[in-house]
Image 1: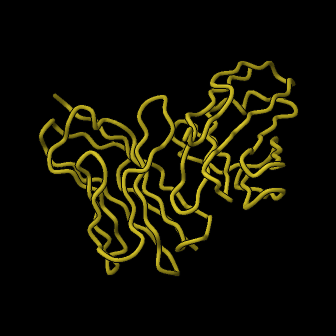
Image 2 (image 1 turned 135 degrees about the vertical axis):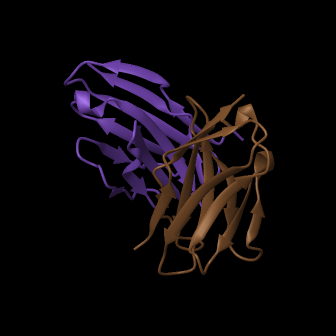
Image 3 (image 1 turned 90 degrees about the vertical axis):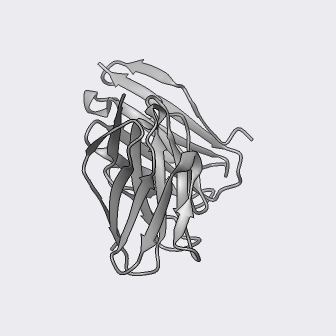
Amino acid sequence: AQSVTQLGSHVSVSEGALVLLRCNYSSSVPPYLFWYVQYPNQGLQLLLKYTTGATLVKGINGFEAEFKKSETSFHLTKPSAHMSDAAEYFCAVKEGTGGFKTIFGAGTRLFVKA
Amino acid sequence: NAGVTQTPKFRVLKTGQSMTLLCAQDMNHEYMYWYRQDPGMGLRLIHYSVGEGTTAKGEVPDGYNVSRLKKQNFLLGLESAAPSQTSVYFCASSYDEQYFGPGTRLTVT
């Protein structure tokens, strides 16, 4: 069975500081991994995804994540936080291509202080 | 492309009333989903569909029904609304990643 654990329901950083949001997953088959972002009063939108190939994936707004199979992790980072990054972030895992079942983490709310 | 659209955006119901939420997608996706989002609960899957004419229960299906008569549409029905169904409802469709609609904020009084 698949599962996703996001460490920390709330993360607070100062503007310009490194953003690190942690995600660990479990999957019995090679996973597809995703990060979604949700701004207030909006739906979730895809930030980045890992399917196959290069384990460091870059997404929108300067975010990137690295798939580490040995650690079963897919942490999200951004070198320098901006006020507009304040949102809720969801990590998700899916069993490969063509399948439909996606498991979402509980979410991490990112606060950015001026 | 409009992506995934939902109607209505807001609705207030009295206990016992019924309503239907409409989701439409123009990406020709086979898979569609209905979620509810409540504070501190993350996203919870209500029902899903793997193709036209098929539906299946998710983790919180009680009190809801769905239909997928056309590939592009996925309807969520509440036959007798209860205050516990006050929530924000999201529809999504997918091949690999999921594409979400803007949400419907439902209040049941």
